[in-house]
Image 1: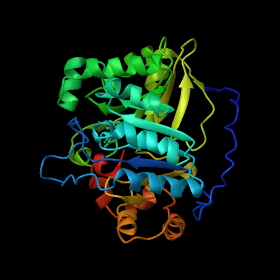
Image 2 (image 1 turned 135 degrees about the vertical axis):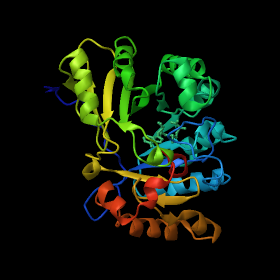
Image 3 (image 1 turned 135 degrees about the horizontal axis):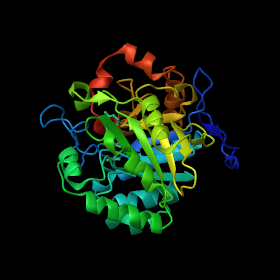
Length: 343
Ligand code: SAM
């Protein structure tokens, strides 16, 4: 039994009206922008086997990315999360973040990273006034970390997390829960929130890319929550952030919070406010829908900002009602690895 706590103060009103509304009345004001498909880890469930998929060179130049962000800002996008692949392996990422901050007018800028290079790039993140980082971390055990990712890097990731918290960035840890792989660490991750002020978010494994073929037992969001409550007692549910895919809770007395993301059950689609730009420059309206609007070709063909904005406004009307409907259209999306879509 969870208790719902009173709502926190509402987000400041954005003076820029949102001009991106789909046919279900959802306002699309959050962009996940994948700046590369390359990654410095080889996570078993995420990274395609060599030769399975061609990882193209970064399709968009810095100026293309900043221009698209500026166009989307004019259309009312308020929040951008830089992702990939691993965004911190893109050459010149610090300068790109700075340009996005200064030239696109986007009010909220976040980054998702595997954390391997987080410590090294922290000064650049601070210089660009990045508002927060999500760090993907599926285990707290060094040998298991190496088994999952192919790299003995847990110490480096943890150092990055500590320093990011000390630097005052808003930090979230993303844990993809896999039955028989790391589901025995759910309680350990929860215990971290006793002293650390970050949010640990447990994510359902989606059957995408290598995970589509893998023989990993899925652990549902409901199961994750019930295991946490079994260990720590009833949780207090915190008010949902607008458009957030996570249900957030606090264990009584803990400094940090816990989130559960039903990424595969998809119980949040009716609130979805997301757009994605894939590493090859496609505008994608749903993680589970293949294809997209080819923004890169518009840039190469010399379309002006107004024409690109019009194309985007037309395209977003057709955002699928939910991930299940999108998936029905084609199985293809579920076979694509996340690094090619932008996780
Ligand atoms: N490299 C960055 C990182 O590690 O956060 C950003 C890209 S990565 C593809 C984004 C997130 O997608 C990671 O947290 C990763 O664990 C998650 N992911 C990849 N494949 C997934 C799958 N099949 N199901 C659920 N999450 C997945």
